[in-house]
Image (cartoon, rainbow, N blue to C red; front, side, top):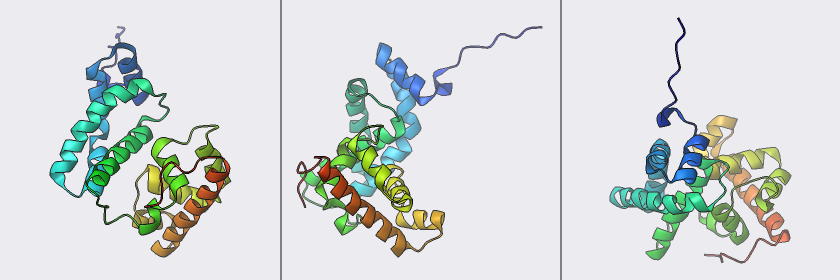
Length: 196
């Protein structure tokens, strides 16, 4: 006896399918389902930067409202990476408003304006300056920079992955950022965010 397959429900959709449904018909159900998958990541980003559970929860709600507008305005290739950057930017704007810095970010991580601009406003897609410059980095620098920024892994987590000490990981990331800064400035990506 033949069994008919039931159509997939939204919880079984891929990220791309959910996003496409939202963009096509504005279905908040599909966007809500998609956002729910990444709420723990968004909350973690917000808590890390804002250092306050209540403010982090408020930010999670505000980011969702921002998402309802921006998801239709941008061509999104990787929703998870794009959402991470959106959440990070939102929370950085919040703590900048209050003129305080998150204490666990390494001092020099916000000093390279060209690199900060690229990570804040651009995901590495084929042909973009960030993608081209990432491609030019030595493999160990590229891997550690991508893990640190796009997967929000800590120095310790990265050190465990590559079996190196934390100091070496920090050096890879700092050197990677320095090389990215030089490359991005040559590509004309500079001067939007000043040194802090």
